[in-house]
Image (cartoon, rainbow, N blue to C red; front, top):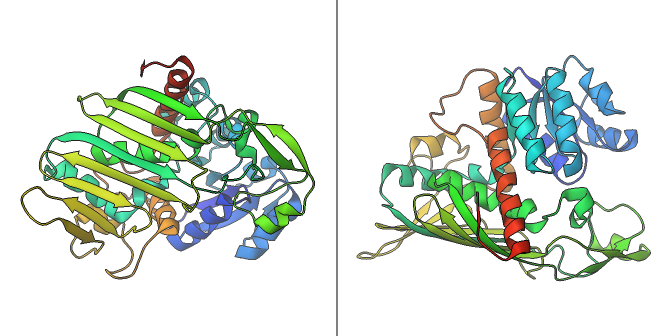
Length: 382
């Protein structure tokens, strides 16, 4: 059990995910803040939480709160992070860290001058076999990396009647699919390989330039039946449903990735392959406990998550024995364990202990380069 207490801002899809993971990680959740007091109270009652805040200042004034988790809409992250730090609270922010690189650079500067811990929730890097892949690359068994390929695809916006605040540039930022899910892939691949992106060439597609917006509020991934009963108005869409990116890494390796939120049948599928001079490593989030190893001169292999057989670092981020699956909710728990251990000054991570504000800033710089590349139809250097 950690001594620090948390408060969570946001009661939509991801806020309760944070709450549940915090409780499972041994962190006391002091309170929760939604857009209305009723939403705050409903989630507080659901999880047995002490406080349901009526506004952000009430949360920040609570001297029993040590850490603020921001799962609010993107446009609030920058100001809320600053206010939390000024109130002496550690901050764990959902991605994106801010709406643009000027804001994120300011947050990185503030974090560097502060004793507070600040992180961004790139949870995907905490799948145990992804950590195992990183350790194998670091040990040299994969060899020199030739290229990386992969994708992140979903279907929750597959129809023109599918709508969420994220599709509006004014709410979520100029990029949507790339910023929302593509940054998870980019962070994952860079954290696994240790490679840095040098330049990008991108192509974006808005499949539905007009969507039918329900007159009323809907949460992400909310029940389709309820949304179909609401009256609708046309909404002009200025963000992409699909994007493809060519990547050049600083060491000369190459990469390709695509993202989509309109690929029918894929609810949430992340894939990567790292092609090295000795082996290829492959992973698919739909089979989260399996790491595929491709060989040239012997049979291919499947490494199944088992803490007794994996590297020490991967084992530290595994809570269950082999044969007992760990998935999406567990990645949040493992990230939070790293973050709160750092707050307590009790961490044995020897590298990259958790995604920081600097990692969040890097992803925003990547998004801005990708957007410039797509708009100008050329390679853009970072």
